[in-house]
Length: 390
Length: 240
Image (cartoon, rainbow over all chains, first blue to last red; front, side, top):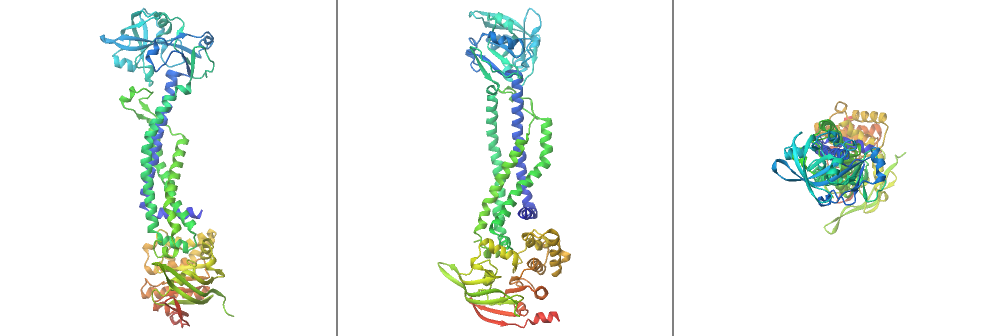
């Protein structure tokens, strides 16, 4: 207790030097927490949106269907298993049929994926109810990126061409009945969502599907022959990987920031021990052991981190709270990235992140503070009293 | 009845390694100090005064012979025990004051009591009393850079005296002070010696200090060349 009291007195007594270090360190705190909070917010939002719009509680993929291989689309479908029909009827699973096609917007040709979805489904957020309209044209819903890139609007007619199960090309016009806006680009770009039964008829694939999407409240465990279960955790892995990559990039910034702060503390400690050797000798003359003196100097250094926490809290909490409320606007160009990125990311600062950062900085500062103090152990009190270094 | 012997030095020598050889700072010292003495170790620079004081203060150890301070053999003390001895029983006054610049007068004087873990109320009373002894009650909140040299040395005396040690070791306490301040300091220490009975041992070559001493030990080239009773006339004059 006395060491803490004395260290605190020394630290406060050192005035501007202390506060400069504290401000640099507090800056490191706030930037680290902000950056990690931003990634955390992005991660949470991307997971939430991906679950809502694409993967639900998990997916069964037809064994020949590979979402990362466009060439697998031709053959990547199969009969919806009979024993899955109960789950489908109860709204726990919804089938999606994916087929390759081409569309001709304004005289151009563009590859697209036709995705058939049950207009009554409520498992993913695609506004499939819009596909319930009764009309001679095939109704289709598309995402806003798809609409923007192809200059399509609601009520536009567009020609599509596909091959049916026998390999015969067929073509027809589809009518855009709704345009949805989503952060999940993989359900938007290059995709036309049609009524499932209509697509099955068009392709002569009655009762077939490529994907069975599970409700997010439903944990699919049953296995179906010819279908591969992809758990939600597995399907979210690419997001975790991207976030991890971003975190590693962020680590470089943290490392440099921390390094600067640590250098400042180390430098202060070395200078302090050099300038205060007479004081060190006096402390020993007054009855302190070398260990106690080392402890005081180490605590003094470590207290920079404690003071920095307080200073960081003073300006960091309002600042981080403001960003958490108003969010961080993302530039337009990131909208087309492969993973879900919202227009505005709302950083999240879980207690684990804040406490972990404080602990990390505190431990680093304590180690850096301790290292130069080992020199005190070599000081001879009679020389230190006279201001000499042994 | 003779006052008790608090320091006993027998056949003590101290050597320092220097350029591959050994420099003898003290040789064959035999001395004894009794409680309540106001004694000075005098001699020219390099005669071994400070080295002798450092050994008595358990800041250094003899190379040969023995130094018994308050029944502790300095050679046999561990770092921790030596620190305890200094903490509990010894006070130090240095030529350069060695105050903590970021502490106030009050905090500087309080410091040894914090190490002794004295309760707050008793600590406060002792600090205020010690500051009053040296006449700095109006400067308790000042920091050393705001004080004159004489005032700094008085703070150092208060710091050395606050725990009422049995022995105070003062190394050239007036070397950085003018005549007037030197006399003030010495009168203060002399008064504390008489009123509280604290033993003072000085290392000095300052005539002003020598005039206050009641015993004068002269060192030359690390050997005791004279050990005599002094008149302490300056102190008596000041008292009268």
